[in-house]
Length: 283
Image (cartoon, rainbow, N blue to C red; front, side, top):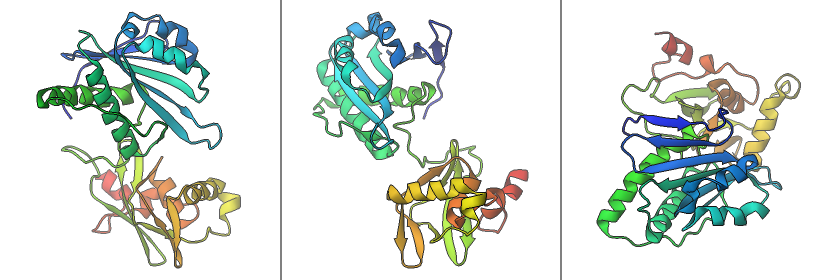
């Protein structure tokens, strides 16, 4: 991903309220706001044109994060129609500053974003089907550049819905090597990431929690139950197996799930040479 200079503007001075974002030498613009600022965002001139929008929130029945990704030739009118959908708490809109996005363009971007968010697996995408659009090769290339800028701006605006849980490591990335956590002959593999720690698909974890876990480390019990109920951890013979990459807030949280009780991730995770994460980070 190319370097970028991003300009953020806070009309009310509050980073949690309405804000706009632009990238140098990019024809697009983003406008984001919490639901409490819906009237303010609807009053923006940018929303009088075609674009795409993302609504994020939580499913009231399951408690899982969800998102709705849509497109409209007049964004303001479409957002008004979403007033009766109670799940969303944040809206992010992307438009073109030169108003060059056509209906086919925004349908293409909608389809690509739905695919990217579904692939990332961080949220449940409520509209998993998109009509998409067939475009000339030159238009697709231009829109892929536009899409790349959207990917850069979304985390800055507080949304990680298209960010893969396990991202490729680039030059200068610290601790990019695979780390190993072993217990009772079981092996889990993972690595540090920019947002925490990821345990890789196929990793193993102990079947039962330690007897002391409920009293001393209740968060581990809750986290393992959540991962099990969500299908990320499944029973396999005498242990649990990760069915997909799983992100944790820290190496210790990841190790605790593998161990079935409290664990110091800086000591539990080691590289191929046997160096602990603590030793590696101290070098």
